[in-house]
Image (cartoon, rainbow, N blue to C red):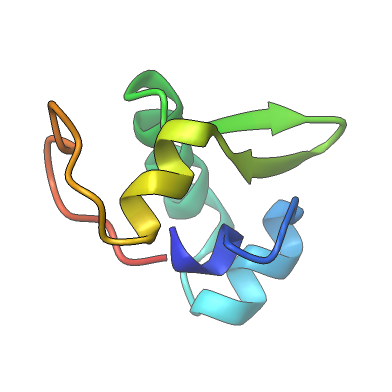
Amino acid sequence: MRALAGGPRSIELLSRDTGIEAGELMAVLMELELEGLVEQFTGSYQLTMKGSRYTEGKKLAKPPAEPVSL
C-alpha cells in the first residue's frame, strides 16, 4: 500500500515499482478494494481515506485480513 501513498498509480507503474506481476497485483488490489483500503479511479488505483490512515500507522477498527506489502 505504500506504493500508492504518493497518489493514483496505474497497474503498470505499481508492477514496475513493486516487482509484483500484473496478474498477481490485480488480485491483491481487488482484495484491498474489498477491504475498503484502495479504490479504482480512472484506470489507476488510489488509497481511500481508510487506506491512508493504515499507511500512516494509525490503527483501524479492522485491519486487512492479511498484511500486504505494495
